[in-house]
Amino acid sequence: MGLSRTDGGLYVPEGAHEAAVLRALREHDDDLRLVPQGTDRDGRPFYKVARYYGSERPVEFILTWGDITNGIAYPLSMAIVDEVRRHDRSMRGFDARDSDDLNAELVAKRLKDSRDEGREIARWFQSKLDGNISVLFRSKNLKQARDRVRGRTKESKLKP
Image (cartoon, rainbow, N blue to C red; front, top):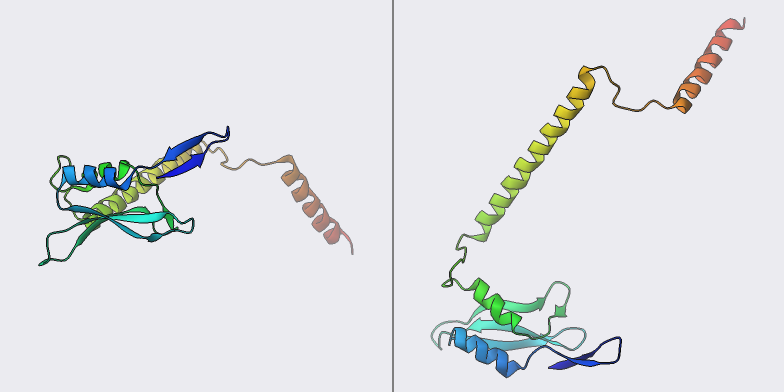
C-alpha cells in the first residue's frame, strides 16, 4: 500500500493490502490467485488475477490490473475484486457471447446509425432545394469579385 500526498499536504493511503485483496478473491472463488507481474515506469507492480486448477492444467489468466498498452499499473484496490466478479461467467448478468459477435453487432449498429443520419441530412437538404433556396450563403464580397472579373472581360472585348 502506498501513500499519495494531496495539495494540502495530507498523506492519503492509496490502494489496499495485497493480503486483503487476496482474501476477498478467495471468498469469491477459492481457485483465484493474485500474481504480481513486473512493475510500471513508476515502480508500481502490475497484478494479474489467475485461476489455478491444479498441476494438471495450465493457469488461466482472467485479467491484468492496469493499462498494459500505456504501461500504467493501477493501484491495488478492492475494485479488482469487483472487476473479477463482473467477468465471472457463473455470475448473474454475464454476457457469454463471443467478443467477435459483440464487435460485429457494434459495427452493424454504427453503420445503421450512420446511414440513418445520412438520410436525415439528405432529407433536410432536399427540403431546402425544393423551394429553390440556395444552400450556400452568397456573400457581398463574392458578388463584387464576380463583377470585377466580368468588368475586365468586357473591357478586353471593347478594346480594338
